[in-house]
Length: 118
Length: 421
Image (tube, rainbow over all chains, first blue to last red; front, side, top):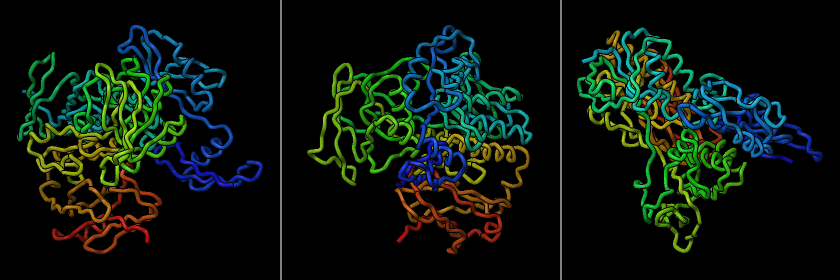
């Protein structure tokens, strides 16, 4: 069986074809133009992950919210649960780029970090 | 009257990269004039990741990408005036600006880099029937409300236009708990990057309705719904396909307009397709010493390319300030576009250039397995196979230095698409 994917690893958006056998084992990955594409196709078939970006509330900052991102991709199926956690948080200014906001979100081992000063 | 070697109008990614490059090239007195309260431009509200893969080799969010340049600017003696609005640039490169601290400012600059970016096409640019209910806004405005001001502008959303900002906002609103009912696109293809269709729409089962537009808005105080309809290949509404969709918010992602009011004021010629200045490979406009780069010159898909283009402008401005010989000896020919190519930047190239020149262009339709052909004086210089060409993705082709060396003032350089048979 063949499955066609569009790689989301970078804005190039390569069209990738994954060939699977009857048991769903990956036989080949073609169409990617870099290693990241190969890795994307393999995780997409087994445990799809996505980078998550959002904002958290800030008290006393220059804006009411500060942007955050997941330091690494999180499982796609957990995006909405992660959002619930992120929306519970209120931090106090000053916040700096790279500050850890949540250390290990929902046991994924992934940190949520600030992506701007506030 | 303040005196500067270089004045950069706009402190977004283009303006900062141009100023930094000029500094690196040895220009002494540089000033950046920025309308907003901070440097960074639109990146401040683009909190999603995907920036910097080409330039930094890592995936950053907008504020992180901007932050790196803001930091670099701080570490130089480049002067920055934020909250400062440039009102006029004269044909002698005299800048009139205004801010709360200085009042009226006059700046005499040897060279000027225009880096004002774009604004979004508003509702008024479309002919949608209906009252002026609240809840109708551009996707970028909604992005500011959510990502900077921290509140949700609506709960049930229809997005018109499948440009990248619209797609990104479809995901953002969904993650924050809104229901994005659909993204309508007038054209038979999306204007956004394929990866954004995948990770912003398909991931959340948001339908993308191609060849579909919004023809009417309903609701008096607050938007209550919109009427959508299918369009034919001429963009005309097909009668009988009208459908009512209940929603409280309509977001528009229907294109960007380069902010060239100042450019026009100087008397610089504009390209009718890009709506940006006509420039050379150094990004100099047809007004001596005035350069343009970034989205005010042509709408880019990626900020990385904005940075690289701005560096060309910064370098060009530096050589204009330091050693005008290149400019005085230049001999320009126009680049021309053939089948399938809508425009080329730069529109003019110096045939005395000793270096390769990259031509950036967009195609007018979607092509599969086509070739990008570069011709000099009717001879094919290169023919590159492309699996896919789409209007949403900027392409480029290089004119090698050895080809440029053979060009004369009557030569032609042409880029065209050759379709597969």
